[in-house]
Image (tube, rainbow, N blue to C red):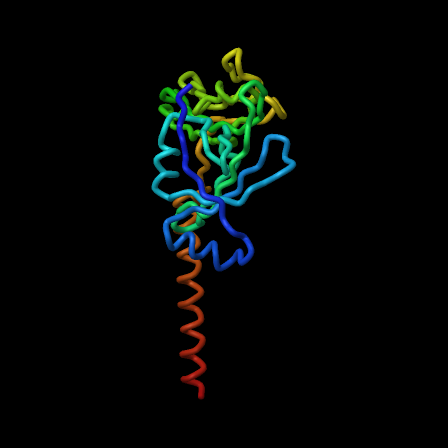
Length: 218
């Protein structure tokens, strides 16, 4: 497992709103570290550039220093700005390397779907899977081959094969993806459209004649 170090700084939360704004203006990302037993937490900040580089790495477990102690952590959650997609906040979760953790891992589809080639549409219902494993065995993604999916076919969690070191957790009956026919709006036959237009034209002509007759009689 590749070890990736992230430098963090403890932050003062006495004046939370103003301090967070100042941090972000200084290209620092506010965050919180939670211990593995969830009994304590520490407010911290991480350099924005350093965090982005860490996220681009192949590591899933990071080494940080909290005070004088070094901790192994995983990323528990990241909050993004809804428009700019900049990172607003990050939660780090302390782990013990010999104790299994449950974590969400992104799904990655591989292969060219036969059903899509035939004109179908690939619907993705899940983007992540919950797995349980040792921290060192956390994968970057779960690959799912969709090559043999035809129109009407689907894949559920229970059908996914994972490494022996990993265990899928949660509802295994959940739908991950399916291939369906594209929906088409019902179109009126051209004959019906012509009839409707003809009727409307006749009504307009009739109304115009009546108006003209009224004007003449007056």
